[in-house]
Structures are given as C-alpha cells and as structure tokens.
Amino acid sequence: MDEKKGINNALGTIRIADEVVSIIAGLAATEVEGVAGMSGGIAGGIAEILGRKNFSKGVKVEVGEKEAAIDLYIIVKYGVRIPDIALNVQEAVKAAIENMTGLSTVEVNVHVQGVGFPEDVKTEEVRVR
Image (cartoon, rainbow, N blue to C red; front, side, top):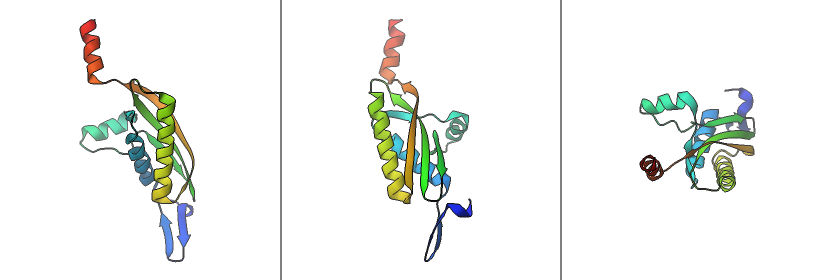
C-alpha cells in the first residue's frame, strides 16, 4: 500500500487496505433488503467453491488519502423496485464506510447485473411449460 494512503496523526500513520473497504462495502450491500447477492465474476466463484466466503465479491474500490469511490455489482431479488434498492445500497454502503474507516465516500455506483428468482418461481415455470 502506498505511503500516501495513510492517515497521519500524533502517534503515527493509520493505513486502511483497499480490501478492507471492499469487505465493508460488500457486507453492507448484502444486508440491504432486496439484494439477492453480489455479481463477482470467476474469481469470486472459485473462492466460494473452495469453501471461502469472498466478502469483497462484486466490489471495486478506489481509496485515496481521505476519500473512497466504490463500484458495486449486485443482483436484485425478483419483484423489488430497483431504483429504491439501489438508493438503499448507496446509503448503507456510504454510512458503513464512513463510520468504520473515517474515509469520506465521494461516490457509490451501483450496477445491477441481474435478477435473482426465488426457487418457487423457477419451479412454477418448469411445471407450466
């Protein structure tokens, strides 16, 4: 991690790794009602197959000296109003990062990558066909 990404105080320097901010953002996003999960590509899928939960899956962060920008790639539950879910995710992630790290969150971009269907809907579709 770069020296410039630390917060200097009288006792020394505090550095917060990008991975830490990613995990905080991922956890905050998945706790929002209406989010089915995160869309993370092949690396996240391999980690989960190997038995490790990848909390930073679907999260891209850019952390500066005193601020952070976050991109989240989410899957929403079927039947929810997507703009409301996206706003709730933005607010939850911003609050979590600012409260836990002290970094100012300049932007939280939410990218909806898909819709998660409940098992009941999938079963009904198969029966109808």
